[in-house]
Length: 116
Image 1: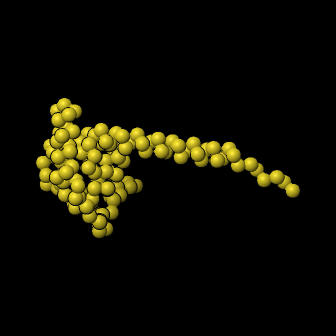
Image 2 (image 1 turned 30 degrees about the vertical axis):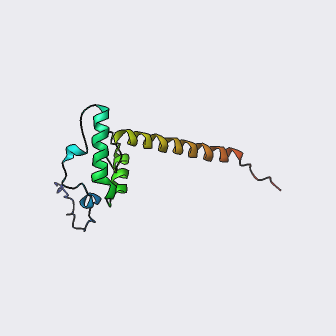
Image 3 (image 1 turned 45 degrees about the vertical axis):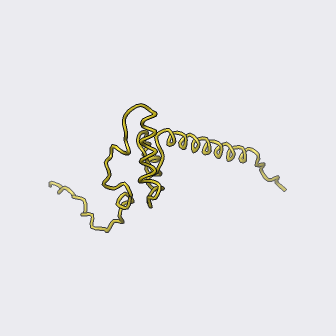
């Protein structure tokens, strides 16, 4: 007897709007956020873009967090240029490493309760 293929149920659940629908840059030229050229020119374009769009954007934080979680390496995200994104990633990695070391040190310092 042949088995009937199961099709996934239709996705009929309402979805909340994606944060990008409320971004100040929605509809802007993507080249403003992913400029090409030497590092100095990119930094100037990124700074202008940040001042124009990101400074007053209501969804700046989710934009930045999304870029960090996806590992974006280029472009302006959440108001940060690529150099600033790298620095933020580095600081977060260092903070996470210190936190892990503190937890590990605390575990080593704990002594088992003496049996009475």
